[in-house]
Length: 434
Image (cartoon, rainbow, N blue to C red; front, side, top):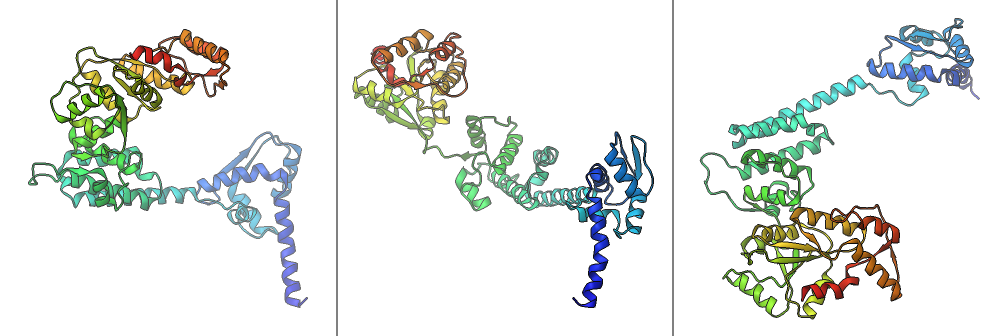
């Protein structure tokens, strides 16, 4: 070992011993309190920390650290005194440096707050400049929209550059939708994917659930004096107010036996398919132009599973039937809404399991539908029949759901613990559809 290295090692030994002392269990509470105070103070050793209910180990450790005897159950320690004590001791460094050495690293929370405030100011200024560069700057609703974004805290959520990009794209999207005075009074018709590609570079940039889509829809609502939508049908309707057409062809609703009275080829095609006992898949695009006038009080049966439609077609049944295919999607609700508006009434049947009961609750509540072989007695009959026939049993799983139309159904299902799918009642449902 060289003379220099020996000297260096000799100098490090007192500091290492001092740091080992500072890590004593009796000082843990002190360092926790001091760390919190320093981080609030901009890492400056000012103010006082107070420790209550000291135990013997803590009093001993504090007495050694402060070079004075502590016998009381509590102690007040000035951070400036502690800083001086550490600097003049074998530790040889100030309070902030000592705590950084003990770990974990200190955070200057005041500096973090100041930096965040400065970043928010920059984001607001940039957003205002971007808005001012468009024709939206003269629109009172646009200013209100930007104010709402600020108040809602949107500018503080997520990485600053990402948030700024999103707000900028929202401004550009709204500028494309509302070109302002002097523009063509007939609004341009946009496909949502086309609009998203123009303003974000991605056809999915305005998909439901994205922050950008929410910001743009909030702006459309303000521009059109409409409410901000809370569900998928409402969002589609709001897009239409701004002449934006969401995808209306990929989702379909399965129907059977619909015979609308209209005279166009669309209604004629549905009647012909019904006459030939063929099902029909309808898109939202078709529903926008289809006249769904049926005779007043026409009873529409609604089922959950496509197998019921298939069996009704095979059996040549004639009653109109709509299938939710396991969930009340936008296109399903759009069709049921349109039929309800013409005075149709509904009867609903689905699976006897908890998700099936939840779906039934939704449909029955929305359309004041009657339950269709969905009472406790129907469930018990089908459960008994499966046992008699030796059908393998499916156990109920998931949280219990009360049936709004029959308070006895959920207890009966709980008691037997069996899940029954709609296909098990096909013969009974086909009787009703005759």
